[in-house]
Image 1 (cartoon, rainbow, N blue to C red):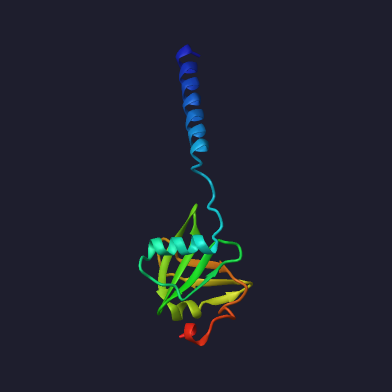
Image 2 (cartoon, rainbow, N blue to C red):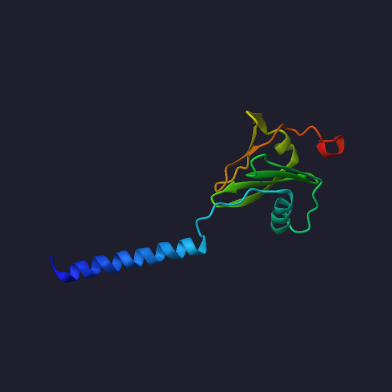
Length: 133
């Protein structure tokens, strides 16, 4: 084996080590922290500026949320290392199937086909007649 081969392998190894160190230092691969009320409202305000929330229900594991805004449901769900936000009709959110403590909302979107959100119950017991319409 030639010395050039060993030099090339060492240089490649050093370059990979530098890139891994840079990714660790920049925290590129960190998981998203769970949603809380303030963070869910901030994400929804960023995605849907000017929309007022009539109700907000956050998943028990912090991986999603459903909000009512007029006749629309604003859905946040975790995808990869961040969250995606989608708007669907409120009736579609109410009709979502609820099994094993999770609602499954069909978003009909190629990039985020369904939102699976863990809630204690659906529709929520605190949902009043005004919010149900």
